[in-house]
Length: 229
Image 1 (cartoon, rainbow, N blue to C red):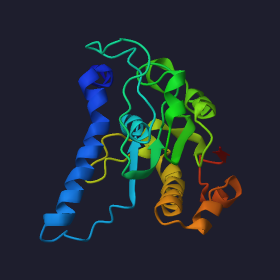
Image 2: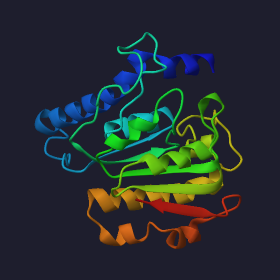
Image 3: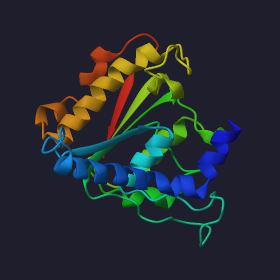
């Protein structure tokens, strides 16, 4: 946890992460031109970004939000207020799992207004944030997102670690008793949102409502609210 706290306050780490996304897209474009197996197979017109926790921050910034300088070390001038714009115009939309609200370490209230791309946030009532901030802080920040094709999914009893499962290892390093209740709905929602904005699927857009998602409710996750802009 000490390492994590240092990482999310490290100015080089925080400001470099969105640039890593742009670097990955650069490489994909290069492979699409030159790689023997991938040449001409990558659809560069349909690029979406998705991330959880620190990855949610990365996604939000790539979609146009601006990080705060207030808590970064070493200091980045002028030391407070909004950091640089680090979005990438090649990205068409994003999904932020456990998107951060206002407060240390990532965002101030002014950070959200520069959002440019369709963004979906997904969180839950037990998804607590860093530095003692409540789960509700994530939902409350949605009011600061600008008007646009944005949505926020709010799940009853969903916890922070429900959105990851350490897939690919012999055991799950981050156990959570409600993960199996959360992930079926999250998988459905992420696919619907990406189909909506990467494939122009209007039917998928119509299914992003509280009523349409109720069949995915399971176990501890007994309610879903869908907020829209």
